Length: 132
Image 1 (cartoon, rainbow, N blue to C red):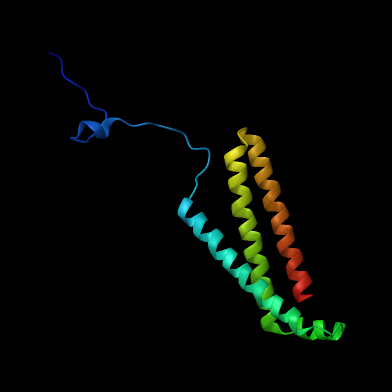
Image 2 (cartoon, rainbow, N blue to C red):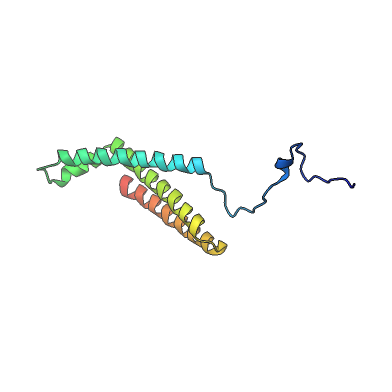
């Protein structure tokens, strides 16, 4: 009988059966899942914080109170962090959407580049709007 030629170095026969697949993009499932949850928690905290701020404004519809509140540095930082979390949350979600449902490579690449461009523009705009 002839010799059997192995293509892998494992001594276990089942380990030599492999499926080779080219990846169109790397998904980091656990990292993306954790990022979505972390950014969602930041946005939830800001929503609760802002809700209580609005409750404190009942009966006072004066622009100076809004200006005084949002003029505090810690509120600006919290607001900016929340916007950054929102943009990161959007990027992970939309990127996964493009990766899962848009099959033509160049169309997917274009949509991802357009999304990144839009989100970078929103980030820059948020810095100017908050820190003015």
